[in-house]
Length: 293
Image 1 (cartoon, rainbow, N blue to C red):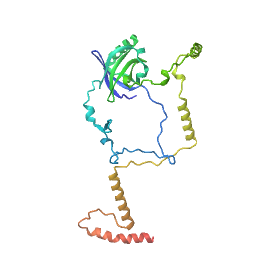
Image 2: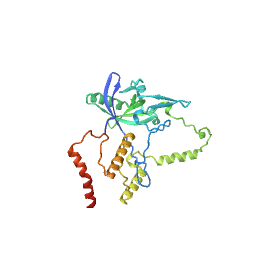
Image 3: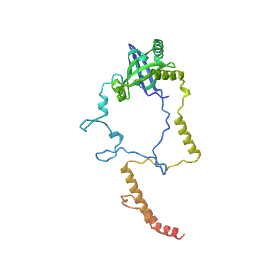
Image 4: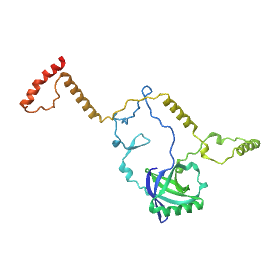
C-alpha cells in the first residue's frame, strides 16, 4: 500500500505522527467507452461553452453558480488563503460509546500507521482506547475538506472513519410514514419467528459478488473465443499549431520529392561552391538513368 497523507494524531499534549492509507478498494470490473465497430477509445474534450475553445487543465478554475445564473470564479490562491487548522492534524475532540454513532454518518475508511518515533505513543493510545470500549471522535482535513471522523481499533491498527456532517444526512420524507398502518399481533409474531430462524453469526467470507464473477466469466469467454479487437495504436498529438505546421511541412516535402526537386531551406545560401554546382548538373542525368533501368 502507498500512503496518501501524512500528519499526526493530536491527543491533549501528545502528538503521534502517522501515515494514512486507504483501507478499502472497489473491485468493480472497469470499462472504457469504445466505438462498437472497431473498439477505438472515445475521447472527451474540455470545451468552453462561451468561445468553443478546448481548454487545458492549467486554465481551468472552480466556479460557484449563484441563483441568478452568474458564476463566482475561485482560484487556487483563494483556497490557499482559507483557514484549515486540521490540515496536518487529527484532532481528538472526545471519546464516545460506538453504539451512539449511527452508521449512516460513515463515509470512508483509512488505516493509520505510526512513524518510527511515534510507535510507543500509538500503541499506548490504541491499547487504552481498545480497553475503554469507546471510539475517539476527531476532526481531520483531507483533500481540502474538513470532516468529522472516528478512530477505532481493528486488528491492532487504528481505523479512521470519515463522517458526513449532520446537514448532509437526508431526512426520509415518505408518505407512508404519515399513514396509520395497522399490524396484527399474529403477523408480528410470525415475522419475529422468521427472523429468529434466520439468525446467524456474520461471516463476510461466505458472501460473494456473484454479478462481478459472472461478468468476469463473460469477458473470459469472449477472450477464449477470440472476440477481441486490436484498435490502432494512437500517437500522442502535439498542440494544434505544431500539428498544422508539421503537416504543412510534410506536404511541401512530398511535393518537392514528386517534382524531382531536392529539398531546399527557405533561405538559399548566398553562394555555391563549384563542386556543388557540378553535383546539381549531374543529378538530372542520374535520375534519367534510374528511370531507364
